[in-house]
Image (tube, rainbow, N blue to C red; front, side, top):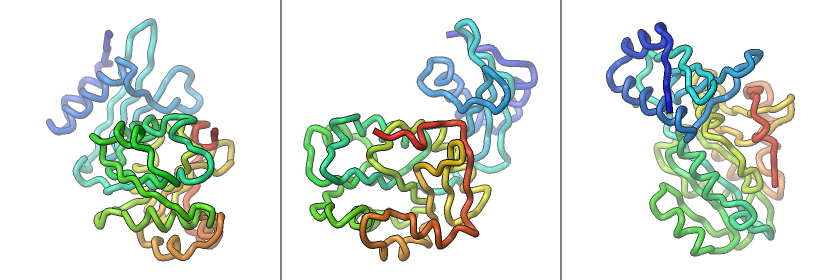
Length: 254
């Protein structure tokens, strides 16, 4: 794999703190190898942007087997100051999503995107699936009362939240095509906007995952039926942020 840096990108890389330089170099290697990718830049064909969880950016393009780094911008914010994040994946029900599409792929995407702690709510134990996740920060919760609706799975999952959680990414098991770059972008925008709810949209259609501030846990715990968090979104419509993204995975379902 061949990596080329523009003069300005190299200058900015050298100007970043040493810890951030190491992180940037690792991300660039991942971009070149195809292990990770970025979000397509609006209105600039062939150019992509990778955003770090703490606000850094790498602008690049792939051309004839080369990865060309057009620009690097580091943040004045320390990578260590990022919000502690938890993802709550609702996969309980009659459909077994771990077999239809490996939820382990979703787990990998969430972790690469910057999620610290993942809670998966299922309707039954799947030892083979759980064995694939033994080396990952994933908590498996069984909801035997899944027929009471999504709200029951939400309550089961929220009880497993880490005490230091600063953001809850709520998503469904039938939306497994989430990409790491989307998660990273949502984390960054959640921190910048400071809104209690962040909803990604594609062509103005609301999607997943929806990001909730932990202050809304009491409201989430009071939900009933199969409505998920829609009633909370309506109640907080005036102070939630809708983020339009160029990523159809937010609305793509099985």
